[in-house]
Amino acid sequence: MVMYEELSNFLISLSEHRLPWAFIVLGTMIVTSLTLYGFWEMVLRIPRLIVQPRKGGR
Image (cartoon, rainbow, N blue to C red; front, side, top):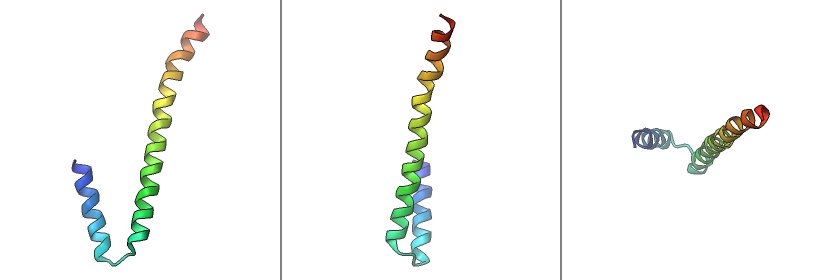
């Protein structure tokens, strides 16, 4: 919740500088997609790290 409030305040401060909203939305989408991609990459690697040593040991 705190991060959401900080993000909204950041977007409001950007809008006060009269940046086009399309640019703001595009930037937000890119950052969000990169964050989610990195998060899922990490989540998908954890099972491999757990499974590989067991397979290698046996």
